[in-house]
Image (cartoon, rainbow, N blue to C red):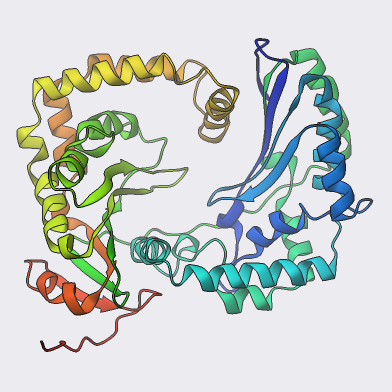
Length: 430
């Protein structure tokens, strides 16, 4: 249990995080974790969906559940005086699922329709193809959290019950609370859950990460007559717990980690190709990607990819002492306001529990910022920003954009379908 007492407002925010999430899905039975959090919001053993919604509203609270790559999370906001009553509803949702077959069919239909709609959205498809190329089909992260339409349709109530029994346990869970509640009262309320929730071990699968390539390969997903092209560029880099992770995040700030990053200043401010461009690290408990991304006007696709590539190639050479001073000033000053809200404090606690960070990890991160030298920044850029070994995914209009990219100096260029499978390309004659 992690908590911060904050009495400025009579409010409380809390979350229960169960480690695993999509990572515990099975490749041959994918999408179960996501459906679990959907159905657990649709009533309990003692309340219909309408009755549960009414009970939450009467408390002036909000409760929601969701599945991410590495966790299942239940979050709640409430008035301080309703903390215990809100926690009781969270407990009921967690420990007494309704297992309603009719609700399951409705949720499956809704999920399948959402998946089908998403297949027409270049940003969603580009993201899924990108992850599949990075992690491969033998890793669960190479498969979408929601599953494919045919996978969702095949999921049964028995699949959900089996997932729940195997993976919902206090042994892999942490509780976080921030707001106008004392440690004594929080622990007293949680004692009820502690006694009801049976502990059991959770078996976590082991996935080997694919070998990272040493070539710059481009994959183009065709969206006929698309007005924009979605660009994702990157490779699998570090876990969030890697010693270089935060220093590399500092290094990346002037490249594309902020609105004043080089790629945004060029692609948005100077060229007017996009509303925004960025670069970022997104590691979790396992290595995650370094990514450069943007959505650009179709007729600027080639030039935008070229600018991303060139900015990453030259960053370590042209980053200056002035850039480093700007980064230090911006990051240190922004930290003064980064932990003012209950939500930001809750996020800090969740980082501590998920990654094992010490209580003063924010202070240590500020020390990293202050102590970084230009030589260290350049070395990090050379080590972790190498566009010559990245995968480039572009989702856009192949008829007008593919040919130019095919002759743009990449080690390979391939047209792929919306699931990342190679398909033949036929040149469209003018």
